[in-house]
Length: 596
Image 1 (tube, one colour):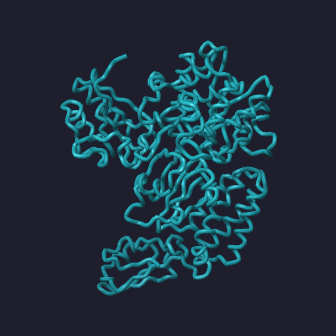
Image 2 (cartoon, helix red, strand yellow; image 1 turned 90 degrees about the vertical axis):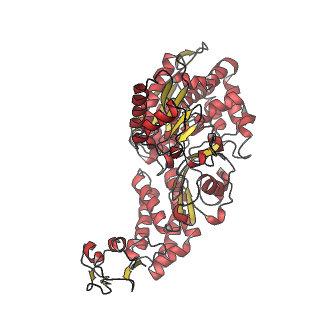
Image 3 (spheres, one colour; image 1 turned 45 degrees about the vertical axis):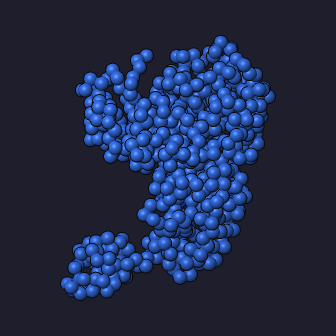
């Protein structure tokens, strides 16, 4: 294996790939070859570095130079100056990565210094398409240890002792789940990796599969050994082409190295993995709907019990864990339960990965110890809201979660604390909202998503969420009443208590939490027929003030001829004609048009 003096790591995750990181990599390779540096410098495509806002990202080692917002046009200069002459191109470096000409390590950069990367430990560091790099980072050591030094009972006990809880939503103890399946007698058992990540704005599981697929395969094999399963399935949505490709490569490489397949490590244990593609149905994130989909049926939930640990895929005992949960398992086996419990909280040990998005400066992927406060995530890691806007709320848990206000910024992030506030951990979506967001519209957005994604099997979810959405649409159109608010609360409780699966049971959460913390906004919509945030179009009006100079620019952009007035005189807007598109306000050079 060749030894290189420098390595150029180019982010190959979905976010950076959509910004031409593949062409950036190609240009590095071409320029390096042109300058006869190809024997000295290696270019590698990695997974996500996390700081998506600054992508595409390129890191050059051994210096650790962090180049952000890369373009193809910047490549030649980096090769000529940095890789050839040994001089940093400072103006291309991420501002916080250098201090008085001294390159900071990533752990010293503000975005990273409060994080602890366990699930994301290899993302952005290794080539996910080369099993040798995973092995060099202690890959498959945990599987070897489990198969040669531990009994299945001991493996389950370590996972139980670690206290790890499922990172996919409900937070059920992983070791307990494994323990349910292990004693069940069957000619076949299954391990399923749930990679059907459907929350709007969530991309944690996708990034792990893109940046470190072997960690998931290794964990599935360990789980298989623990419960006596010899077959595994990764259920991943087809909208994740990079993740699917890298999974396919990883499975093929693991089989060739004897790390999947027959008689792994000469232990007599067999385990194989296949990929099953989902069509993007949100409900298939629920385990019984996911099982139905793998079986070739329509993805619909069923009553429990029996639970999948007793009767799952094709009626056989089955364990289902999501990607992030599994990615922790090799580290727990290698380092022990106490190591995992050494960070996080007593009831929620370990770390949690969040996709930080919305009105936040540092959009990206973050992994924090449980117990870190919302304030630390939003301000210290996320950098606060752009343009000096005031933070208003954060939605955690996606459509199944709820909004948390600025009054709760000191709240430690763990499973139980978020539930107490009327939200939930979910898979890890964290959408930040500022003063310009209308909370009624936010609730309507998430409920609209849930209505569209309901499988339709049970009446409370199928019909109840539609009725709630109808009421919310009435409210944002200025047709709502105070009685509608009472109806929303009544419907919410009924749907929560009577729906068949988690999708319906949690669907009202965004409405419940926004009604609880932002009831004044709802009341403004139904009593004064105004949207305090100026978002709901039906409740808006545009007015031309005395600052108008009569330049007629607003007249020229109005598509419905709603504006009249003479040149050099104050113009007027006919409210009956106005369609509230805002084009006039954008065109006015004198800030003479206001939105009310």
